[in-house]
Each structure stands twice: as structure tokens, then as C-alpha cells.
Image (cartoon, rainbow, N blue to C red; front, top):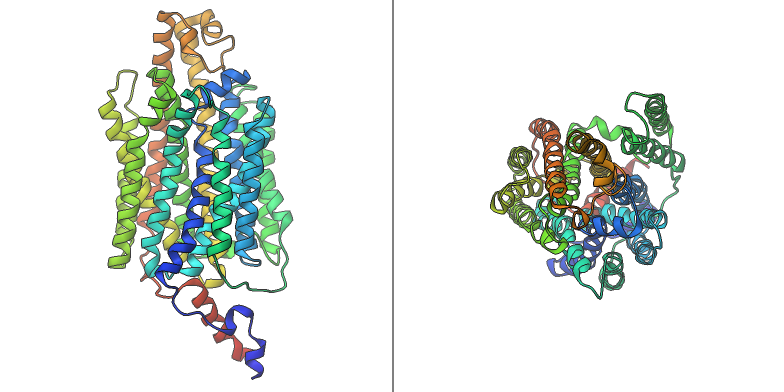
Length: 528
């Protein structure tokens, strides 16, 4: 009797297997929330040239409108994951969606690029919570042996939100009575719907325990990553790559991250427990997740600009041209998830995904201003298929290999590093793109480079306002610079493949996270 009364709330009555109907009902709200949070990162992609023109921004601002949201999402994912191990997951998800609504409303009404960037940070705070908590809730409800089926669905939602966003954004921009502001406002009603669905369908036990949240660690990690991202986006524009500014920002960023590691190693409840990385699967999955993030976010953001400037397409057509990547990601993620659940084997899908993603990056590095739509579609579909097989299955492999009480922090850590890969990829590749464009413009136009691109060398050109001979040069420059970005991505995706090859396959667990946690606590009780 004494032992029973001492049990935590979640262990007092170990839950039976969650019915598939109940799981699907709970997933409905999660999927809507996941879709709108990911949509926030990508819906502006095809709208950015128009937004930058209307608000009079530069190529650096172009990058930061995307990066600021990704950075806020990245920096807060570990904190959301930690809180999920301590407080009500349902309440936390609804709180994150509420933040997303506030950020979306501010962005939709913004008068200038400065407020737009701030609003994107608020959106990122909410998106970080949704991105981290969705997979954590799934792991709590569903055994790893069955998780592949549902993870495939989530991977598809993630992929569709990532790549279909530009299509939706393009259509909104081209619709005269809507405009680019609706790229931000369109998510508000869907987010409110997700909050209502979660209130009605999600029911998880709350584990109550004494906690200490490592706010200092969270702050230092955020500051260190922000410093490096500021450097990567400004180097070559505001100051030379080899300069005292570079030394100060890089040295300062690395010093802050080193201090963060020291704090994390001594914190009672670290945001990112360093002990996680003693697990080989978690470490290798983290490395691969960073590189997948670079490929996924870096690829989709700058392809949209390539479609509109190098190929002269409208925002809507540019969005339609993104569909092959959507379908590739959707099909591969869903099919791989179903087959993993059926066979109980997952490593082959990771290796195949790494090989296909590498091939997609290599193919896209060959594009130019004359590449046919058919070839582009094939190349993008190949990249989408590779990313789809890798993305969610890396999380599945790590979740299957850690104790139940570390599920939340493990999931959020992987999501953090994948998002960080995306933020670093967009920021660094954006800086490389801006510098490459400036160099090529100067080579081909000489003193006319600044005037021909809209008055400053780093401005995003409006090709409809340029004379025909200059348009052809500008389009060739953007095509060449975009291909160079994918060429940089080839060795990065090769590293992801190497990391995946060294992950050791282990049988998938047949208990859900909640059941595993109850089992672990039951084993510990006699010791007390």
C-alpha cells in the first residue's frame, strides 16, 4: 500500500494501448498545428521579392526575414522540450500556438521590415514549441514499433508545409485583393482551429515533480548561435570576411557556446543534457539532422528566388514549380513510415535517403538559366525523396534508443539541431549568394552593377523594371549563383550519408513512451 501511494500520477495506473481512433483524433490537432507552424517558415519564400520591394529592403534583409523566424524556433526548441518533460504537454502546445497567432497578426500588419523581423521572431517562438512538442506527444502515445506509420504522416505534413508554402504564398501575392500580407494572416484561423482540436482530443497524464529550468543555459545557447548567424549574414556585405569584425563575432560566438557547454555540464536540469551524446545513435542522428536542415531549408528558400529572377516566373508559377519536391517528400516519407511499421527495420531507409538526397543536391548544382522545367522537376523530386526518407526517421531511431524519461529532451535536441542547420544554412548560404551575385554583377556590368540591380549592389532586383539586355545578365547571374549554393551543399549531404552509415540498427520498442515511463518508475520503486 505504501509503495502505491508513493507512485507519481502517471505511474499509478499504467495506461493500456492507445486505440488507433484515439490516436488519430489527437493527431488531427497536432497535424494542423504542425502544418501552420512550418508554413510560417516557408509561405513567405515566393512573396519575399515583392515584400522586399514594397518595404524597400536589401538582400541581407531578404535572408533575415527567413532566418529570424528559424533562429527563434531553433533557439527555443530545447527549452520547449525540457518543459514538456516537466509540465502539461497539452497546455504547452496551446501556449505555443497562441504565440504563433500573435506573431502572425503583427507580421500581417507590419509597416516596415524592422517590425516584420520582430514579428517573425515571435512566430518562431510559437513554431519552436509546436515543432518540438508534436513529436514528443506522439512518442508519449505511440510505441516506436508503431510510430513509423504515424511519423510518416507527420513527415509528410512537415514536408508539405515546407515546400507547399511557397505555392500558397505565390498565389496570395498574385491575387490583387489579397496581397503578401495574407501570407502571414492566413495561418491565424487554422492555428485557432488547432487549439480547439487539441483541447477536445488530446488527453495525456501530467508527471509532476520538483524541477529547475536551466534558463542561463538556454540564454547562452541562443546568444552564441545568434552571434554566429549575425556574422554569417553580414560578412562580405558590411565588412570583409577576413577582418576584426569576423574575429570578434566568431570568437565571441564560440566563447559563449563554450561557456554554454560548461553551464550545461553542471546544471541540475540542463536544457541539452550532454550525457545524451554518449549515446552513439543520438550523436550520429544529430549530425545528420543538422545537415538535412541545411539541405531542406537552404534549398527551398533560394530555389524560389531562382524561379522568379533567373527564370522570370510569377510567384504563383514559382510555387507550382516547387510541387515536385512536395510530392517526392510526401510519397517517400509516407511510404517509408508504413514499411518501417510493417517490417520493423529502419536503417535501410536512412541510408537510401542519404544517397538520394546527395544525388538531388548534385543534380541541382548543374542548373542554369536555360534548364528545362522537366529537368528541374526531376532534380527537385529526387531531393524531396531523399529528405523525406531521412527527416522523421532520424528522430524515430533516436527515440527508440533512449530511456522514456529522456524522450522529450532527445526529440527537442534533434529538432533543435535540424532547425539550427536550417537557420545556419539560410544565413550562411544567403551571405554566399549575396556576395557571389555582387561579384558576378560587377564582372558583367562594371560601374552599372549598382544601378542595374536597383540602386545598391545587394538589393534584390525587380526585373520588370530593367532594360532587356540587363535582364538577361541579371538572370544568368542569379542562375549561376544558385547552382553554386547547391554545389556547396554536395559535401554537406555526403557527410550526412556518412553519419547515417555508422548508426547501429536496433529493434523497435513495442511500448509507448507513457507505458515505458510507467515501467521504468515501477522498476525504481523497490529501491525506495
